[in-house]
Length: 394
Image (cartoon, rainbow, N blue to C red):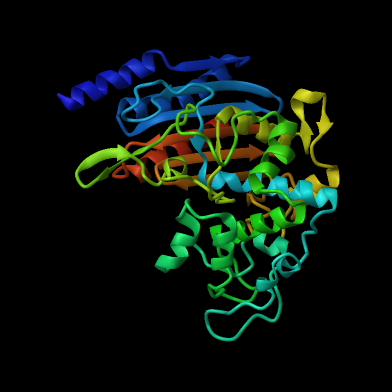
């Protein structure tokens, strides 16, 4: 009975889901419909609760699609304004804020962190001894500062420093300073949410403002991103995934906005809430080399800052200033052909793709209905996005 009810609700969501297609040819209609159909089927199968996707090329949107529910309990349909946690897709947005501060002269990429945070002048190293120097802003943005990584085995205290949303960013960064680095700054790559928290605190001190205020003033207001924030209200059209806890299905307790008594922690590289529509505006700014597409080509970033933001940052590295990078035919050895990031936090998943060669972009957010089939869901979505990207290039 419960399964039949779930299937009926999923089919109802599909019947009144929102699809906007502005494709100019039958060929493009085929690939955009294939992509939206992937999300529809995942909702129908009960694997995804709700989703949004926007696809386009350069300044044109070909598809805007939303389907499913805000939560497994709240049978309110996802719409274009529903906020999703975008996980590590926060990193490109956060580094855009940093690049604006660099453009303003408030920060320099090769500044040592100790200029703003004296405790980061000489740090303990895991294998013994202390660092010869402080990590730099650039090294922190590229995950080469030596900070501990959530991709590697973490201690309980290390995890709490990047997952306790009742603390403040300042408190977290004070704690991170006491944790040993994995290596000397600049030596190795280790993907680090902790490092991005330190980066955010540096920005706060340099600009004398909270990072949420910086996100709004340096990114959201110029690009007119009206649904993007670290701190949404729980009743303000916010999606949430579900997980099984002690035999019962509950809204995902790792969702930052559900923190009790209050979410006070901006996980700089991981806890932005946004919409696929806002992220699409962001992707279009990237594709147009730092220009704001809906404001007559007005610049968001200077040509110099945009070039620095997207280029290769270290030899043979495939991660730049907040972006995963692909290098190939059609660009120089230091200029990527493609920028992308994936996001995951609790039951939230997200993806952003910006193809600098073809002008293709895709932004997608979705919530998981449990984690048993997480890998299969992720594979289906990434495969569908890749197929759309390849079809758009033909």
